[in-house]
Amino acid sequence: MLLFVLGVSTSVFAQATTNQLNIQVTYPTPAPGSPKLQSLPDTFSAQSHPAPTPTPLPAHLSVSGKVRGYSFDRLNRVQNAANPDRHANEFGALLHLDYRLGDSPVSIGYTYSGAYDFGLNGPKAISNPHIDNTLPGFPLNSPIHEAYVQYRDGSTYLSLGDQVLNLPWAPNSDSRLQPASYQGFDSTFKIEDALSFSLTRIIRFEPRNSSNFNANTLLTAAYPGTTLDKFEAFTPGALRAGLNFHPSPRFDFSADTYEFYNIADLEYGEAKYGLDPYSTVNPYVAAQYVQEDAAGTRDLGRINNHTVGLQLGANVLKGLLFTVSADDSPWQYATVHAATAGAATSGFFVGSGGSGTSVKLAPGVFKVAYGGIASPYTDSYATDPLYTTQISQGTVDRRSAAASEKIALVYTPPNKQWKLLADEAWYNYSNIIAHNVVSEFNLDGTYYLNKVRQGPYKGLFLRVRIAPRQQPILPFGFEYQRFQAEYDF
Image 1 (cartoon, rainbow, N blue to C red):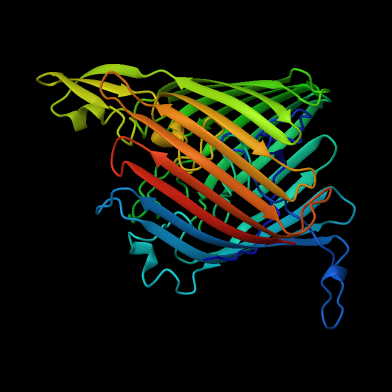
Image 2 (image 1 turned 90 degrees about the horizontal axis):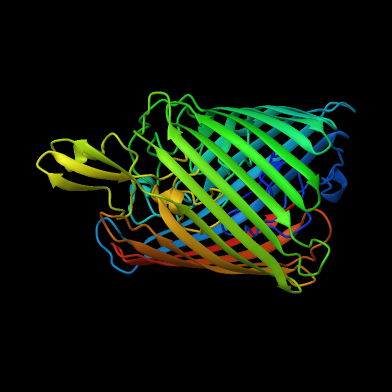
């Protein structure tokens, strides 16, 4: 079944292909993880939607939105109380208003977000284990999904308030009914033509299946779709600083540092180089690095991660992009004296999904395995920037160290009226405690009913995503099936 949502023209200054502000790279780099086949936001004039009694909008007011329909199904190979098949159908709306103050560089933005299932998910959907509440399957009503004041000129960008971001470790995560939103400020300052500096402070967070901003994260609170408990911990938010260096069309480098208060300090860097950007093949190479350590009060325990990633890509045929990617992070081990295995691992950020976490060496002595990334704003969302992240998982979502590989094909015909992505990834979570190898195949297709012209897309498009996964633990295999219809205006 299809579900409809009025969508959003976000306050995002960042460009999705580079995870940096106002930077465009001429060689064909796909977005981190699976390339996202999304429509672009748009604005319209009052004349294009005349009212019965014409009342023109103010000259500096723009309105944009989407209507979106979703049907979600998660099918498990083996079902039990913990792993039932889940489904959800939902209708929703996002509407964005932007008002510019005269000819000044100052504007005010506002977004409403809401969703409703019209009874399609049955009574008490929020507590029904057969409903996929990551969509969610229950109503949403966020009267202030965005409300911000923004300043933008040729060298400075400032935005203060509730806003959608698109940063490497604080993304919009817009693969459900509403994107995630953040309360705080975001800024970028051009130091010189090729160099810019960014500063972001996050105070509160509204996840994609909630209607409220709260001082917590996906790792310190239990949101619907994980458990039905109330919020568990106060989290002061995050501080990010970033640099972007873009000296030529073929080279781009970004470096970000995040302080996730009372959780961890994370450093992230990425470099992309076009090997021959003027050829039809446009080959490129990209590399990424993550380093993270526990910080502050260490609310999640000891964290120690080092991840290195590499990606190669080229247009092997006209409109056909082929990429090969790999990410690798080593396991960390500690010998711990404790009465039980649970007590031994309690001081560490350990993996999930069957990753080996501890083994008993002697009475009261355990070896603990850890080394995954703690990602407060992407955990369980599969929207982190690692190259091998797929639709339903990645090493970040498993909170595990791992070696992972991925191959991907993205085809866009000359008229751009449809897009097709096919990729497969393999994850080796094995360590000296347990063996665990997982694979996932993704098929992601989008068809635009209107002609795709230069600039933002207007009109209706249909999208289908299928993601079967194979794993060595219950439910041993499952498949995500997602069907979407969306109208952008």
